[in-house]
Every structure is written in C-alpha cells, then in structure tokens.
Image (cartoon, rainbow over all chains, first blue to last red; front, side, top):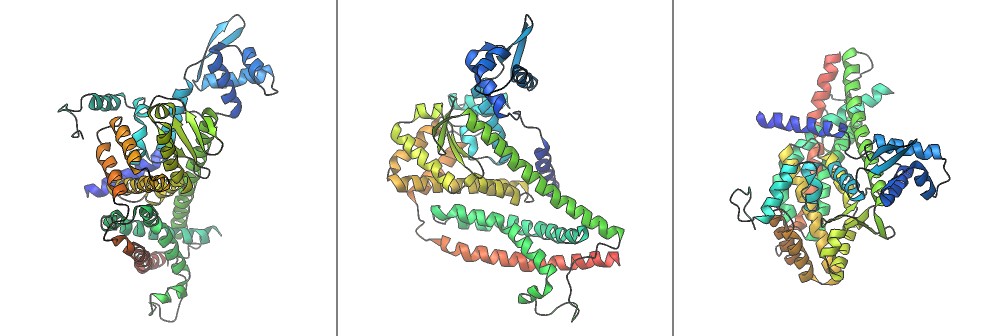
Length: 151
Length: 308
C-alpha cells in the first residue's frame, strides 16, 4: 500500500516538476548581445552598449533591452547623472552553469545518474550541503562519516 | 468529433496504464538480458523496451476500435455475431461525456507538457550555443568553467560541449577519444532517446523507473566507449581517462566507472545470451497487446453498461 502511494506521489511530483519555473530566464538574441557587451566592458551605459552593437537599433531599444535584463536579475544598475550604469550580476560561466542545470532537469534530475558525473559544480548552487559533502568525500576519502565506501 | 476523440483517448489511457505496469514489473527479468547483450546493441534494446508500452497501447486502442483485427488473437467473439467497436458511446450521457472529457484532458495535458518541455529545451540549447565558443561548426563548442564537463545536448540537432576544465585535464589524443565518444551520442541522438524514455516510462513505479533510466544511460555510455575505442584502437588510453576523471568525481561513481571498464574488456559476452533479446521483446509486445485488449475490453463494456 505504501509502495502504491509512493508511486502515485512520484507521478504527481513528476507532473508538478513540469510546471516549475526554470532557474534561467529565457533570453533573446539582442539580450545576449547586450550581455556580451556588458561582460566585456564591466560597467557601461546604454549609449556604450549601443556603440558596440552591430544591430541597427535605437537607443531606446537598447535601454528597454537593458531594463529587461535588469528585471531578470542579470544586471544591476546605478544612477549616474541622468543615465543608468549597468553591471553584470552573473558571469558568463554562471549563466552557462545555470542553463546546463536546467537542461539536466529536463531529463529528470533524479534520474540523471550518468550526467551527474560532470555536474558537481552545477549542483553546488542548488544544494550547498550536498556540495560540501561531495567535496569532503573527495578530500577525505577515509572519513568514516562518508555515506559510501571509497573506491 | 470531440466525443469520438474522447473514446480513443480513454482506450489509450487505460491500455497505457496496464502496459506500463507489465513493462515496469517485468524489468527485473529483462535487465539481466540487457546486461548480457553485446555493448553495441544493449542501448537500442533497452530503448525499445522503454517504448513498448506506448506502441502496445496504440495497438490495443486500434484493436478495440477495429474488433475484426483482434480476430488474430481472439477467435470467439464475446458478443456473438454482433460486432462493433468496444468503446462507450459518450455522446448521449453526462457520465459518458465526463469520461471522454477527462481522457481528452489527460492526453491533451500530456501532449502539452511534452511539447512545452521540448520547446524549452530547444530555447536553452540555442542560448547555450550562443554563449559557448564554437570550435567546429555543427560539431562541438567550448564552454567556460573549471569543472571537467563534456556532454552532448540538443534533441533534434545535438551538439557537443566541452568545458575549459576538461580541456585542461586532457591531452590532445585524449581529447580526440573524448570527442569520438561524444560523437557516438550525437550520431545515435541519445538526448532525444532519453527525452522519449523519460516520458514513456512516466507511469512506472519510481524505483523501477530510476533503475531503468540509469541502466539505459549506462548502456549508452558503454556503446559510446566501445565506438570510440573501435575507431582508434586505444582502449588503454580511454580507460586511463576514465580513471583520471573518476578521481575528480564523487565516490558513488566508482562502481559506475568500473562497469564501463568491464564493458570495454568484455565487448561481446562469451555466452551471447543477448541474441534472444529481440524475440523476447517482440513476445513482450504481443503479450501486452493481447492481455490489455482482453482486460480493457470488459472495462469498456462496464462503462457502456453504466451509460445505458
């Protein structure tokens, strides 16, 4: 009976998992181009981004693109005179890690036994305790607290 | 039109639940068969095993809608000479319409979730490819990061990603082996296969599903190892790479790497019991179709009786 209810729970959890919001916001090509400029420059205004972009776009388009990135918590901004100065809140590497984490989740996080191999660092951002345990196990393979015997 | 679709969906759902149960609880027996199959065919066999419930439930729905096709399995018909589709007429009663609407919503919801997940995956892959540094067009890209990571992503147009950390750890020859391994995943469209299996085994009990998906992933890795070694003949080097990477991994992976090492050493099992896998899979498919046609039929009749 217990097994049946566990099975039902897993099916329901599986369905609910599909409704969960992804960690990484979806990004359009223009947003990615703008992010590239901000990463390269460190801190810049909308005018600086416009100067670097190859697209034939207006300043207000760039401003709204940066505003969207700010709302997606990928950029932070500070007021400088009448303009905003934008700075990246995540590095390219962190954004890629987050994307890979989402892709891994697409294939069922609990079932990704083979993929987990390469994802130690990506797991860290989700569960710091797990990361600590894994790092501890690697550094102290003879530790008796380790849940599995070392190889 | 809607009621007609509802009838089909209802028979599909009932038979899919039954077929999933048979496949899930029969997996313990079949898993031994896959482990004794040659490494180059085990992943294909396990994939076929995973999609049998889907194919069988479609076949059962067809049998119920076209009873004369079922004469192949059932010679005597339960209704004598009165032969008609074994589906409830849902257009007349509230109960019937409710059954059909519920079934249609379940199938529609499943299709929506599958499509949504595929679309999201496509967007993520596209973003990842933009952010990564493409080394070889349509083949592989570098991604920043110190962790030694290499993987193949993308459902319809798979692409290989190798992290800077992985490139620092490997020599040029080892990198070639790694890329050949990943190309095997790309050629066989393993991400798409995993995506399909992830959905086709959705109704399996959790522990069996986890075990099946993990076994299938291992079979895919073993086949990729085999193809990389088969191309270069550098078995020892691949084993050394696996050993080195295992040092960077968690303790849980030790047994996993050991299984891959063993699979490379025993490419084709000596007793070759894997030969029996194809007829056994075909047998399982026929069993599921016959059994579910036989079992779902009275359920459909019962629903018809409720409505009358």
